[in-house]
Image (tube, rainbow, N blue to C red):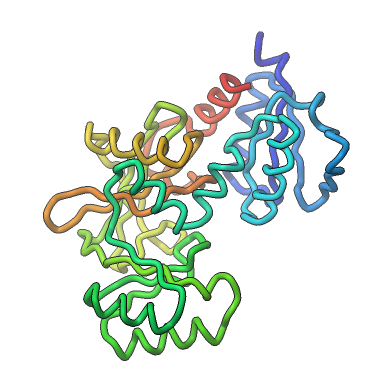
Length: 285
């Protein structure tokens, strides 16, 4: 079998349910692979030490910074990775993600990036309340703030300025989408939208990592086309796309995730997700 001649590396540190299922799918297909713990990697920049060893390296790292540097080096050596350095760089930064989506004509919520507290407050006032403040980098719905009035805006902006650091020095401000207590997450693998699911919650943050309930969502042509457009806008690969339904019936893309978890989706959809991912890896390798 072709899969027996392919040598894969899986870049990851923490072994979650997703990685266990991925390893099982690889073993069921007779694929030779190594788990590469990035916490133990020391990459000799002049050595190109892994070029002859792997056909492809699959990044499942939950550390954005470690993944980004590792992929930059690996791609520089000529090793193919999924996802690529460029995709991870774009998806790991909400400013870059939104910019890419807009440049490719993908509908997104109205967004402003401000570079000072004063500019951020003015932008919020002009946009109108409520708005959502997000860190430019981050996942699992952490450090999001729904700002309902000027007093709250001043407090949140002051706190971010006091905390300092790269995460809080750039202000990513997005209009609040009054979605119907849910959003939609899709999984795109290459040119296929594998599934769509609702993430339902009474809270305005609907991430399953924050307690959102996963439910099957019909995969309409609109959801499929928009998901594929969003994935292509950031460079393609294995990606999760988050869509929101506006109060006037439109769909907009909020974010694109470059290392999708899928344990929540397993409660809602009847798909061999890990197997689909592995089959795509073999095609790419």
